Image (cartoon, rainbow over all chains, first blue to last red; front, side):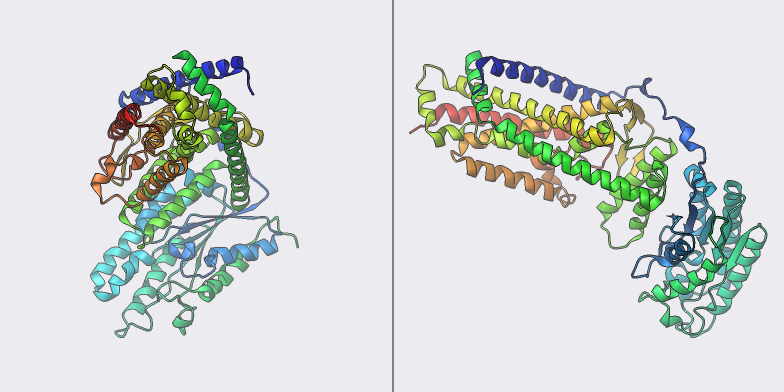
Length: 266
Length: 326
């Protein structure tokens, strides 16, 4: 049993706390409604951390749309995951992947994303950069096929070329050395398209994209059209748009052997 | 009156309720500290660096990907949009929204426990403050004293307020003390962004400003304490009305849990904003999290809580002074 004295102490402490909380409560209300000034005491965190510290890890930065994200792959890895798996095996696990792909992203959105200071910082750290973009520009969730019109496609393509040039320039500005692997488009509609107009369009699109890639050093255009050309349904997910696990593996098998690193142990 | 309060405090302390509550808080804090620690570790492994910017960036990307899914509801979408914009703002300002350290842990812990955990703890004390006297039969002894009944009840209510303050403080101290072992006892002056104005899925950053984390934490505590007092008062009222401790606890528990569920689904039922249990997350207003029902503000939530509080208090005193005791 506690003595009367300690009960008295506890009571006094409790009473003091009550007053403190009541005051804090009043302060919170006051502060919320009367917009005060920024606190002078607040010091920005030291930006020393910002300086690029080159670690001993091989850094892969992946940018782009749902293909980069890996949509359609049951394991969720996508081609980025499989490339990373293979690199990990070769580089003794010293591989870091930063997957910045966003589902449904189009080139104009990627252009904005690449301009963000933090993305630039991460790009600067990269040893290689993987990129998929354009499928959503061109296919517009299948709408392009429904009302096929060459003039519309031309405008889309012109805008795409412009965005892509900016994206490449910005990536190069952030990181002058890293190889960029730019994955081309395949035609997911190759079998459902009776008129046969989509295939020439996709091929033409890829040619243009490859041309743009060649204007900037160390960009590797990785074709995927041929992978899906003959048996598209074997390599597509049930949405008939994204690759399935096998499809992603095949894409990854194209990219992984091209990647070299001086840290690699022979 | 002083002696009455001291007497009630004596009962509170002698029943060791506060110690039990302290133990509960301590165990939970240890659990969460461990969980947090594990999460930081896996994050580090996944991203290959302990740079918070990379992990924040990944968080933003993950949210943006969730936005792309067609299966999510409009409210949820708006909520994510708001979070994305806020996190992006932190990133652009080069401020870590969760600067590692015990103070950040305290802030997160108190914010997340404000609508359910702290009220539950208060309930442990409040629910049987009066009803236990009935169960034990000691109410007759108490009421035969030459003291007015309202004075007895008031002394009990003041004790409840004291207990609430103690519990809130104890939660803060325990979470600071225990998490600091792992995360370090720093972060008092880390900058926190406040003043986000949320309108639907958009965030207005025109009136935002930076404040030190210790100020923010103190404000959080003030709001959490207020919520705890209101919930405690309601439990207190039930304890007067229902003479069985178990029953009054059950009713209160049901109300609190229904509030937690309602918060996720009331957006289309507008008059639900007059229920006390959807208004418990006051700290969200400071953080710029969209309220469960559009149109709710800090002021409106506070008013609703105040009305419930006053009604509960009036009813408790009215009933207790007139009740037949047998």
